[in-house]
Length: 440
Length: 105
Image (cartoon, each protein chain N blue to C red):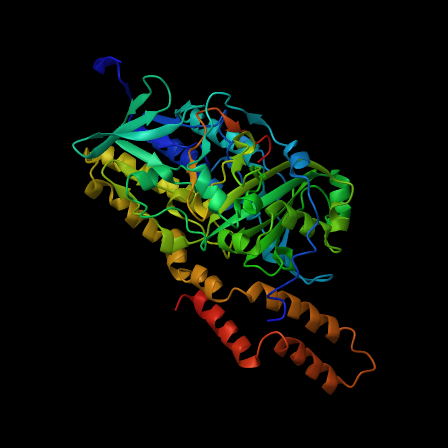
């Protein structure tokens, strides 16, 4: 291509996910000429999660969100934990009260539908979407990134700022040396999911929901992962249920289990199967969740480049946050790009205010506070094997101990713990877990 | 710690090919984005955990102990790239427009 005809933008965004399309929308709204390069057939066709989206992050990009009629499923009006033993379940869930305050904090969504719409909103702001195109490398001048090379013929695209939102398989981030290593098996989880079709009325009846404007989001622990370090989940869509399980890559490999069989085992659980009975498989899928957080964070910027979302390890594994971090970080990256254009400084120094923006938000604060979480799970691999089952035993005994001397009942409950874990070690586990969460 | 070595034999048998019927793909007939780097390395790999951990069962053993990848089934998760013990997988993303296309996500 003639040098004079080169394809040039103010900003290139790599990947039309939650982070990328948010970044593109904000940059375009700020007057920049923006291209989103997306490898899928359409925005959304490669994107996958559990899952629920967090309203605060959507409103931050589009204050008129509701007028735009986002393709969301049900609002999350009941949420919490289900602790599974082999044949039982303890539920600790919350509904009403704070969970029911308007606007509802979280909505169940399907990413192929949602992300297509999310990219369309960026397009309405003026961003230009280039689909079916894979970014394979960067264009560098004097050691600085000044664009991307795609897998299209004459597929070079120039821009002084490239925002990388390529997702968890952050090969481009690695290529630039910003990530020092690939995903790590002990701080990333493989999650597999089945989307099950059920009539809305059936979902309402089985999950105890008043109508289609009520929904559940559950984290499931214990037998769901066969005690391996991992979690299950369950989300209700309007007429579908997302059911899945994630286990750290290393635990999965060591246990020699097939992830789709682990998922089927969860779906067959006597407490779970009745919820899904008669449902039809709509779609299966698998995706890696980067759970290393702070520890696995790449360098977030360099000359001409900013990184956001899963590619930058922005996930809080305990609170199921990631989508909101991706969106807000995308916004921070776009604001940084706008500022860089105003100052005409695209060097690492010029882009360093990205870090300051992230530091001011929950993103860096939370990731720092939970920085030892993946280490905790590594050093306490039996946590999910011991406590969810103990909880089932303890409450099960407490509520069935009729006609039994209660002194003996409490001894039995304590014994069901100490049979699994010596008391001192159990106390140590709880203290260590508490310290991990508080971040000390 | 009694549950640590939980019995692994209560896993239901699942025919992954039936499940994969729910997925839509744009298959690249010209280029395999996943390749075994050295077939002999797979022959020498005793555990072959790829056969188990691949979430779409794309890794299958053949006579003689080599491993074949049904790359057309791949959902591009990345597990094999990260977890192959001898790092014997050449892993690329499919060319633009190809590979899995989630209808719902």
